[in-house]
Length: 112
Length: 113
Image (cartoon, rainbow over all chains, first blue to last red; front, side):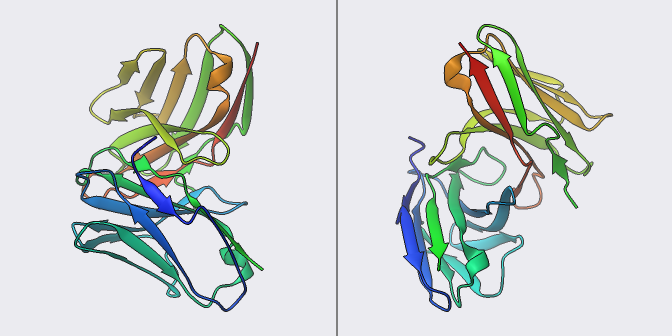
């Protein structure tokens, strides 16, 4: 158990819908990262927050957004969902920036 | 453009022998590297890391070697155990770039009893 929690574990929705994925970092960690793992691709970095502020952005679509709240939990919002958004979404946390990232169990999203 | 590559999608090894997993990278700005292990339906689990100022780091049965001139790193597992069977990902990061990790595609290791 890494100490990073993600909810929900599974999510099934329809195209065009909007969903919110939630992540709670390990106690004391200030950085939260979001990654996407599709069937045909490896883990792709989406976005990083550090202590409430966006720190780095990867290949995140404009339909996707994220935020980190004062209690340091983070949410990833996916809107106007397409079939191709079906994937595993992982959250990771680290104590600061430059430290090892610890991953949560992931949310499996299926868009029908 | 894949900046981190694991060219072997799978590897099969006998229990007790050495497992060697390889990883190549192209971006010379990467300054730290990590290996993660992943079981089905779980998130990646951190195994071992190495900074670019070192060429070797050891932790129990796991050793990571870094060859900066060849832009190559490898993970050695000795001795291999059936419980090591999983997908192994190498990842690379830049300490001054928000620490986003770039992952390789993974290598599935099967350790046969």
